[in-house]
Length: 457
Image 1 (cartoon, rainbow, N blue to C red):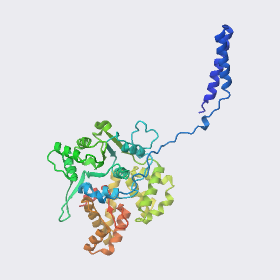
Image 2 (image 1 turned 135 degrees about the vertical axis):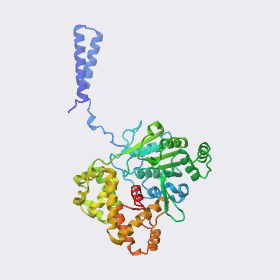
Image 3 (image 1 turned 180 degrees about the vertical axis):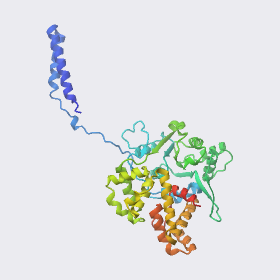
């Protein structure tokens, strides 16, 4: 549709004014009508000399960048922070903090409310803006289904705060923990780290080195200990807490302009009652082939060293049809896309297309189960890989750093040193185990995989 320029509209108005002034002079001669006629003539003449600069006007950018998009990409050295992170926090999240470039921004994935003055800011920039605003929300909630990257985004936010020196203390806990016998190292129970606000207070008291007597005294002690400190409190896997809404309310009593909290959850029930005190961020599934291609490029760059066959898929990154199929088959869940692509690299597109018609969590469980069963059919290396996975799970939830040296010691006890590299290759290709330190080793597995392995004893 072609619009009439403002210059043309101005000429039409000037012409109408001229005609009206001429009619006024004709029917009622006098000084005022003549003056009006002269003004209309001048306006009409000037309208022809006004330049139309609308075409030369510089358009506003579609997106505005106020903060460095790479903020939070660098790893955090937790050497001076580990004592402030409880044992139940989980090696998976601490591994994310120590891993570089663990998050990739994807178009349309982050759904964040647009506040006043934030027009034109992309979602991740809006979150950074809130984080740096002393009057902004005190509670940041990242909500999404499993495999969407909640913990990864939360880790980027924490790293950004630490990198900008906005915080000098990292506190936190995982609501999903595993109790390990310190003598035998065996798993005893698998339950929520805390189920009530009281349990959460006890955790923070332990981290801050203050005794717990009751909730009121604990709250006062925690507040007093955090005076003049700039801290971020991380609560991962809130959905496992029966009284999650009460826990969030207790966080609001602790947080202030210098103390912020970052929470991840699969459920958002009860969050609406927090009003302006919190910022609720949703993670959406990937919806476009372009976003899938960006994610695939990042995945190949991150994992091609441990899964060399992924490099064969570089030529497929520009194939929108294949990327669209991955989105449809995975439901746009990033973790499922990663697992499917790993299968494609090991076999072919045609073979993966023959998977049963399962979606979301059902497809994830099927892929894990198929891989677990496949290991049993791969002889001694496959059986060793099974044992290694269960050992990784136990060590991760007991918050023990899993280094290459500890791996070697473990496999020496098994008397299978010669099969370790082959077993690790099987796990890298099939289960995407992560090693964030290529020199000394720092291994971790996804929480969804840990939950699956729990069912296998």
